[in-house]
Image (cartoon, rainbow over all chains, first blue to last red; front, side, top):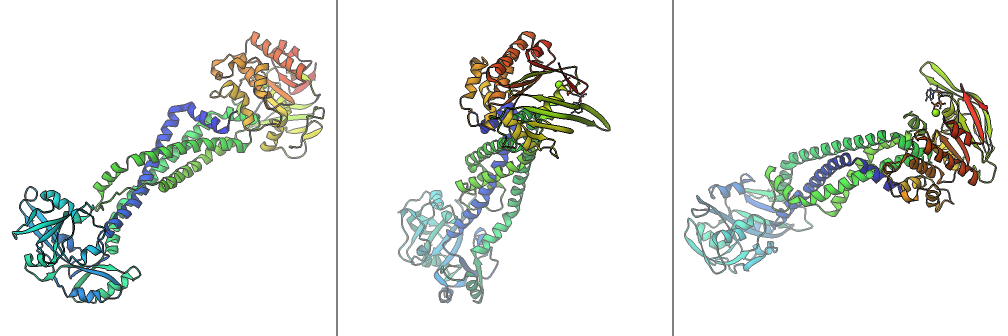
Length: 394
Length: 235
Ligand SMILES: Nc1ncnc2c1ncn2[C@@H]1O[C@H](COP(=O)(O)OP(=O)(O)OP(=O)(O)O)[C@@H](O)[C@H]1O
Ligand SMILES: [Mg+2]
């Protein structure tokens, strides 16, 4: 015959524009909420992905500022601090250490890079240890060099693209005028590896006229206590330990302000939508006092009327919430770009990850808030007495 | 209250000394002043009298839409009012949906529902066990089947009141309460609605309590009660 759901739905359709406006409000708040939750999850995931892509959890460098790694690249290697390669043996001995790889970072000024020249980053790495630490690196062409003093190079995706190099081509190390043969080109990783050229450690040491290294990457055993290992490594003379979990925490702290802001926007949006729902449903209850009174003369209990009005709220919030989720899915990429602009640091992966579970949680929140807003109007409607409402018209 | 089984017993309605005093601020209005009357099952009774004489007040009490200030009312031999404290909304609802159907001067159809949906509306909240097919039967009986998919705004006033009657009858009430059912209709339509009510009373034995200002309509009822200053007089 006719269900209560149909009665509620038809009533919402009575004032189409009012219903639509209310629904738009709910849609907006649902969209903001889903995007925010998606960002909260996505950002951390992307950061974790970046850190996993390093292949090692700890990095040992010669003493100095732990955040110098980036700056020394920019300064063309002038600020680099070095340590003896024998440090590798000291670290390997530590319990809890799985793998160790020595790295020599170098940066040379390339006058042909970009419009006014730029810094080209070089990593001297050991062919025996570095590839095993980053087994996830995939080659677009070729493979790793086989010896540590070959005049060869493996180029990151962007480095190769910039110079238009293929496997078999020669590449010139700027400043030093040394030719290397390209033996491998990596697939895009979305990390800093893309812009780096990897050279056998000995070869780069020869080019840079040093027998020292700048960095040691340490892969910690799965069962080991990273914090303990870290404090033991600090006992070694003149070294600085960088743990990526610390770096992560620092970055998360940096963006927490942004997260709090977005969270407040979401809460405000939800509150506004809530007021909209209360207003709409209450209005419609007041307008229908006589109809509700008549429903009561025909046998509707206060609880029936309560549920009827609550169903209206449920429909409003359900449809609005779903629409918001759909919009959030559709606009995830745009949100990503927007968020990237305002954040101090953005990892390379997708920042806004929305999945079915998250959508379900958001829908529950929206519908829950909606039902809460419907409580008062529904209670008011349940209280309408048949007589008052019929008399009301005279 | 759900124990009221009026189907078998002769549904009589008995009021004793019903009084209703409205309070408006410090002012007291004695709208009903000790009315006693008895209605038998299958009666068609009309209430007439000047405006403000207490017709609506009385009929609302008889129809369990309101609690009296004092006095007793029993339905089918079972006391409803007069047993101590006034009944709550839920108890009144249980009695109403078991025994009564109501129609009013303003038809109060739901404008967003079709004629057929309006008639079926009470069943969404309460459904007696034997009412299958009742909607279509009533639509046919009241001559509005051809309008069943129209909205209330698309039919005439007379048709609207027929829809309201069908809606009031869909749960097979014992008693139909009609407060000025033709107040919004012209003479011709009023006569038609009057004939419908008389026909219902004669053919189905439905008890009808009707308030009206229209003497022609009032005369259709076998029993006529005149009200004056909160008192009822059998004619
Ligand atoms: N809710 C109320 N509050 C206060 N006074 C009321 C209320 N309802 C009715 N009255 C008063 O009670 C008296 C009887 O009213 P009632 O509506 O029963 O008269 P009626 O005979 O139905 O009149 P009409 O023919 O105009 O419908 C009137 O004086 C009216 O003003
Ligand atoms: Mg009246």
